[in-house]
Image 1 (cartoon, helix red, strand yellow):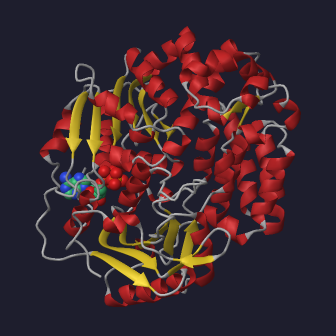
Image 2: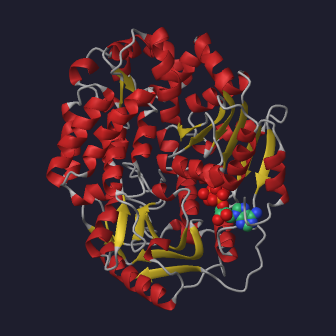
Length: 544
Ligand SMILES: Nc1ncnc2c1ncn2[C@@H]1O[C@H](COP(=O)(O)OP(=O)(O)OP(=O)(O)O)[C@@H](O)[C@H]1O
């Protein structure tokens, strides 16, 4: 399938059918290896079986599925999705009621903050808890989890814990996994939380083959419970997991790879190259001036033919506030990828809203894509399909004023439920806000892609502008009352984030700072350069 030769390391990981952990540097083709393995594996499976492919984002799961399906490859009964989606649709919805409480067809997944206050008042243990959420918390939370379930809710924060409990205790659930799936593939394993890690190990105990893929240097979600120790722990069990290392970066120009590797090891060997494509630029002024200067630089880059389309240029920032500055001052066409308000809620209703909006605005997104999404949550009989299609197609003709009501009507009919007032308000809000609606429109070839460093994970651009390289901002520093020492929020995670940003660049990476910066209180401060510029081993690896 690939139009290049696999490296020997890639080949070894592809041909082995054992449990394995693949540790891979950026751009080393880990997704390429996973795709090849899945395509090979499904060929020998009967129609009723498949593999489980877990990715970190919905976008990544679509891409993985698309790449696996290429040339009409039949993926049979395979599952592709995020870990939350997996826990809900494969474990909690089908098997939860037997263990947690009576079956309700209107179970909804919500964040704790979104639960009605009257119900929160009935959850003394969860309400008072502020520690890490690990698997052994289930017995402590059990009564509250049952109360929530009886009221039609599961908590997004507890999906992993609940899924583990159900899988450990439900024989029917265990038999289902043994019968339906041959393997589980987990991408970005360095960002797994403890409950996710335990779930992976349990599925292997049941007889599935486990493939974990990741890179500890790209661990950037520790602040929400992820821990790179879990992937490291797999590499220390050679009797259970083969350890495959793929470490040739096929994406970045060698000078970019050299710079990024030296961030972690000032003495590491350099790849020979006679050109330097990492540039440090320091502008006069604040982030607002930077936005203007970057616009000029982008126009120059396009004119020189360094890249042929705006969408192959990425502007990456550390904080959301920087997105606002860019929005005000960028002079080139751009698209900001900020928090999608429906994805944040991540319930079956909001996911259906998203699907219907995509269908309405994106000609590549078809009725069948919506039906496929609905099937994650309910089983659809063949005779129901024509009516389902009619309901979905109805959304197509609607203009902006009617669209929200049409989406609510269609969703209520599809899931046979009442949409909550807060979800109704949200969809109405989105349908009249052109900025929010942009989340659901197709990517325009003619727009520079603007996002936080966190959101850039897994993406690549010809040219990257990495902004926000200021002291205090990146690496983030903390104010400790009474202390004049420098305190970082989390030096390692910040460095990993810097590494992720740089390694998104294929051809050129531009590291940007400026003489002043505007902080969260909108005060103008001196813009001292980031401490990352002072790391040893980087001399001669960048231009100025
Ligand atoms: N053996 C190879 N030779 C040449 N190019 C390759 C090889 N393997 C993969 N590639 C190419 O390298 C690029 C990066 O591959 P891929 O997207 O699979 O990387 P990745 O490891 O998942 O990246 P990241 O972790 O940084 O998101 C792709 O364009 C892919 O086609």
